Length: 337
Image 1 (tube, helix red, strand yellow):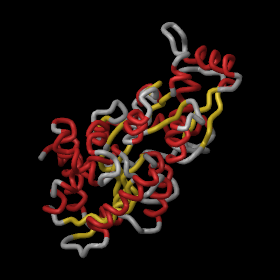
Image 2 (image 1 turned 60 degrees about the horizontal axis):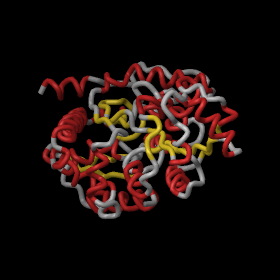
Image 3 (image 1 turned 30 degrees about the horizontal axis):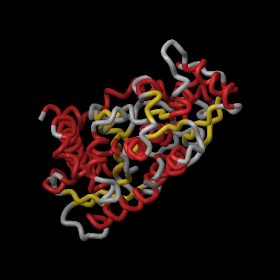
Image 4 (image 1 turned 90 degrees about the vertical axis):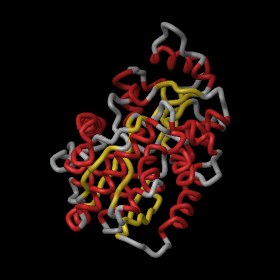
């Protein structure tokens, strides 16, 4: 299943559901990357909790966090639902976004085809397995991921360098887009790839020989994933709306953990509308590639470590300050309620 079709379907669903409709309440312009990590927003919306609070979501689909941050800089969105790193970098450039809740962690995983996986045997280190593959095949392990500076590539670089300590002579990193990553792996044009849900479940169903080589926590300890951030001007003008959104996210995370069968139709409607089987979406909610978390405090230290590692890689000249990045008051009030 091509992610281009998923993104296109998600865009049509969102526009049909609210983007073109006349608002009954306060319009909240949302930018989102439609992955399972954003599921709490979809659930909060479809359950009617935000509508009951007088909010109408107008959602636009993006394919990268940096593009979403630019939309916020242009004043085109009020709510950002994507990775945390672009928000921190954006704040260093005076783009006023504040993280009000987390949404999911440990989303990016490293998957491998059967050929590469066969070299991972008991007692054999990842570095030795990569070297053995290189020697046997005559070419280094090809790993598809997103471009330098992206969250997926940073996670991959950390695992290769710091955890697996792989000799980079045994690795060839292929930097491509999200959709091309999926297609390259299924076509066996690469040996491994970093992916998120629902892509992981889709490719595993299409090719059962593909399996997880390193989970999210393995790639980067405490790997921060999708978050919900609000623009400063919107928060100042509509603090009660921000509180209602956070209340909904907190309730949705609880539902996704305790009653995923109830939550699944909302996620299915947002992500696929029939393009991906509903059973596949339901399966992805229980995936090892997603862990729903609402507490923003749970990702603060990992975010700081992640940004520091991007400096080590040369992606950033200096780590953006976390001062003012996390606005925890809304989450604390939601939990207290």
